Length: 248
Ligand code: BV8
Ligand code: ZN
Image (cartoon, rainbow, N blue to C red):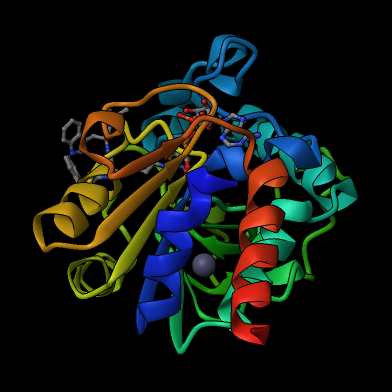
């Protein structure tokens, strides 16, 4: 466990902890990542399915693709990695999860303080008048739902490529990354911008940077500690060690 000693030392002293996550943390819940060999982008074309252009060209196809993912996410459960991070939040003065994920498994695991950079796949809204729709939508139906208020198309409330992130959320995430003592980058290839700037913001502002990913990424050489393991296997051990330390 020596590997984690330096991390535990930093965590014990830390007042502010930032946890940046990507699709990899949900992989052990049975949700495909995007860029892994068997990831979503190996089967589907992101510009066709995760862009406004793709939606306007073929809204039925895009709607059905999101319903296909929603059904998988609805049957999935938070894994030991999500649960350990919710526990870490309870053991740390100020801990914020900054996620690129749209699956809301962090929240289902009990995480309270979270920023969703790329929206979420549960909510929907009208493309024209932005009227929100969540439970009103029957995601089993093949029918493309239209807005009761203006007849516009209804779309999932995720951030598509070429779209700005929700107002002010990236600025908040950048502030947190720039003012934390420990910065975790977990289960992300760090290839999608502007989110992928955050690990470098934390590094440049002096945070102790930890990457958890079985595969090296563009951020690995810049991290102080690169743990090349699955998040669902190493995070419970890290939180266990932290609790042992606190109970001393
Ligand atoms: C924007 C929601 C302003 C939808 C998503 C600067 C430079 C270059 C390009 C750009 C740039 N600025 C903007 C761009 C364009 C683009 C971009 O970054 N393109 C990339 C691909 C080059 N960015 C945008 O379009 C953004 N908008 O910039 O607006 C603007 C406007 C107009 C014109 C210009 C700019 C919007 C980006 C958001 C897109 N929406 N998702 C949906 O989900 O359907 S992004 C999508 O990718 C997901 O949200 C995902 O989270 C994100 C990142 O992927 P990862 O999470 O990292 O997943 P990935 O599969 O890549 O990696 C998984 C990792 O986990 C792997 O490393 C693997 O090894 C690891 N792993 C696997 N198993 C485990 C594990 N780790 C731990 N444990 C395990 N068990
Ligand atoms: Zn409308």
